Image (cartoon, rainbow, N blue to C red; front, side, top):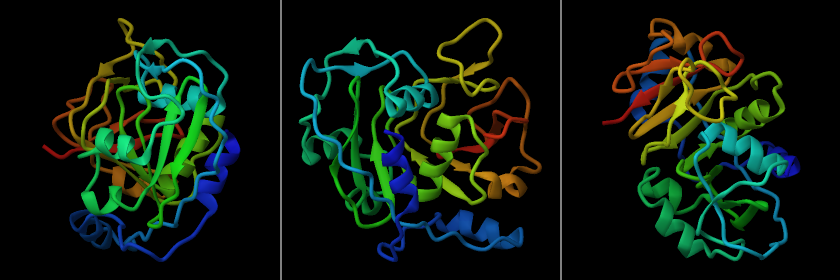
Length: 236
């Protein structure tokens, strides 16, 4: 499974022009940063395993990715897509998660209890998936950042961008590896938002709130003080 993420982050493409939104490119220029042009992503195909239809749930997006990509745990859940899901199925499920021009040409990945399967290869450098209750689209930098999180390694020395315009199922604001809400892990549920990730995003985080208890309606830094700290920006 790790190989799929490695390949997704390593591939390159000039197609699509789907980098950061205009307002964020402006912000980067104002801060003396260059505008980001995402590399292409091409997730490795894995054969389908068939079997029971399962959809992960009740885990955070970050933990789901760790488990699904590493395929080291059995995920309980309600009926969902099996590994033979079609591209049209995923497109319908992911509608609205990112701008239509990105989703239409992105690599589509199905996440299930069995792991990850590339349903359709994309052409614009973005990868879209729906682990549990957390649909998302990530550029190549975002995919590499998720790989770093999975391996508990350093964040990549580049900028990454992740769309989650359908919101998420909640996550700890202080513990990147928390699997569920506890009395003291500062759980936060976010509505439609985007994430700016990666070590190159550090300068962008300056001036934004870093408190343990987050206000998800305003931009804030999640996982502050960890290698995976990133900017959360509500879009509504």
